[in-house]
View: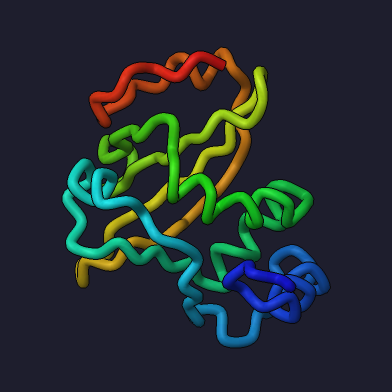
Length: 145
């Protein structure tokens, strides 16, 4: 049974659309996961729910060449190894990172919208060297790779 919150037909539809192609209902939102109470406090969010738009999903598929990282999003949200303040680049933006093996980490960029909604805007992988440069604001000890 598929417990992933985004229906398979949506992922398949987006994979078939060519880069810069037309996406039907591109602003449609899907609840993709929950952040923990501790993470809510760290990013000062009134909600644990996290959403993603079809446009963001398409961006991730096009930029990463695969939908694989999309399936990691609920796990990254639920148990990040680092949370990084990204507001210097984008207002109300945070990076949730989870080590994925010894040499790679999966990264989510989450923004809080004016209506206090948490929304994934990007997802990508980074290497261990880049992971170590990220400054954690969660106050927890660094997790060794």
